[in-house]
Image 1 (cartoon, rainbow, N blue to C red):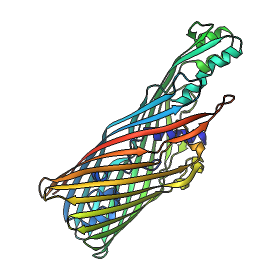
Image 2 (cartoon, rainbow, N blue to C red; image 1 turned 180 degrees about the horizontal axis):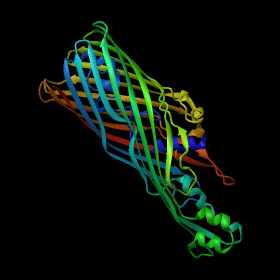
Image 3 (cartoon, helix red, strand yellow; image 1 turned 90 degrees about the vertical axis):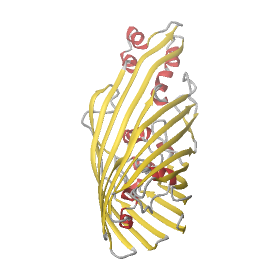
Image 4 (cartoon, helix red, strand yellow; image 1 turned 30 degrees about the vertical axis):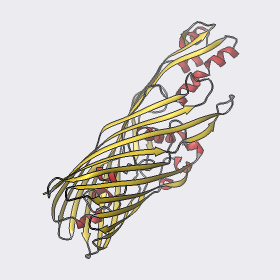
Length: 439
């Protein structure tokens, strides 16, 4: 189970999402970034958020293209006393996070298609590695001193870089069974691909005050087990898999000012397979398969227009993490994850629409789930932006989002050393642009 938790953690480290469950990106349009509440969308991004609501579009063909530029810093402070340094930083830089939506609407029927990174979508670079990689080497001076060889220092070069994209290809059919009620049925094909590259090299120690290769030293004193532990190690592995997500939706619009939506995405059974080129760690056996399901999601939304130019939005999304198959790691989820969002939108004039939103993402995970490889943080997000109606058929959307995370502190221990504190934190900034065109 811990190996699966590690895989989930690496996915979390690579996640480019500004709003998400453990494995799901919910930031799927520039409209979302500027409003943070889209579950009752009646616009083109309803392809993802509210497929049944697409019947409210005007007849014709609609095309929407969005991109996000995401910057995230993942910060770890590890208080293990023997480390050379206690602060670790993982940088996620995502210049390209695209979504494409296309809808054809005629009468009571709408057919739609969408493409976007349903999970992952990022590249993470941990230039100094992670505490869990370094702590074993930091104990070498104590080990050697206890063996009668005075040693005061160590050094090691650790690096980890990973890429992950779970691309989703979604097809929906939506139908208005009455003027106020529409139903939608659809499916999403998930193509998952992870790539990890890492190395642990140049382990050095200073027995009797002289810096030497740890591998050469242990070899010279006849300790092949320790020599193997400090030998250079590399990892180069790809993981791929395919999953399928059925989707059902409902949209109720008793008036032009009110809309209510429901959507259920079924659990996505996803099995990933290792294709390993190099693995000196033993973590990624070539050909090994493991379950990495994307949990089912129940979402609900409300849209209410106080006036034709002033609209409000509420959204609730509930992720069934405990029911996913993560080879047992789902047992470390205390309560399922949920998100609650609210947004306001105001037409300043015919050209400019202003918007702002707030989103709460709540996790409840067992302490054993949270470590430097694998941690999820409850957060509060604020977003805002505008829409420019350039013509009757074309509009441009701009949005920006900042995420405030709740630090997670825990006590950890490595036998036989005393307990120490570990703190996890991060920051996320997301800027988005979207173009919507009606043919």
